[in-house]
Image (cartoon, rainbow, N blue to C red; front, side, top):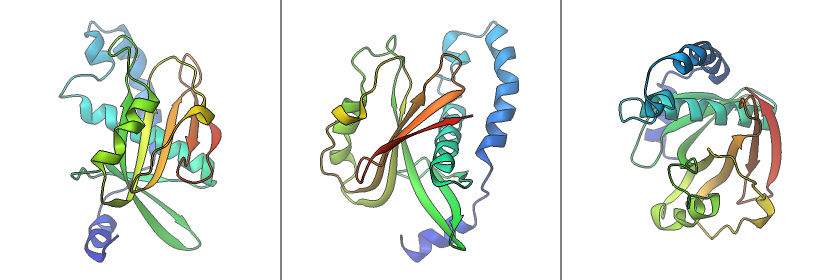
Length: 189
């Protein structure tokens, strides 16, 4: 990361993803009982897309925090190749990671969407993104076998997959880094 980017990142307002998700959970029953369309209830409208991405970013950061053993914060900061910035402190140093979210959409939206298809599309999109972390949100009921995943050569810093493990989506799984030695982590949020 260049010095200019780091200077800009340090000026952002980082928030605790767990607190954000707790506030969002208080709204979920009201939204579920509302007369809103299915797309609005699932944040799948253009005007609600930033909230959907912020929710996914928060879930990913909670998972990364569970994996690393300390809190990972997030700041919304869209650039041409990332959706948010994750930040954490370890060894008395603050670290920053630009993160691009991808999604495996529910079956009813696109039956052919898959983790493998999402990953296969990455190498052509990110040819000079050596600092970028890519996080794929598995947003459908399916079986996911991380060992069966074929990861092509790509120029990104890290590749992760995360998704709900329970019907109520209180239990989540995080798998990766698929560019290193991937393993799974179960977490609650």
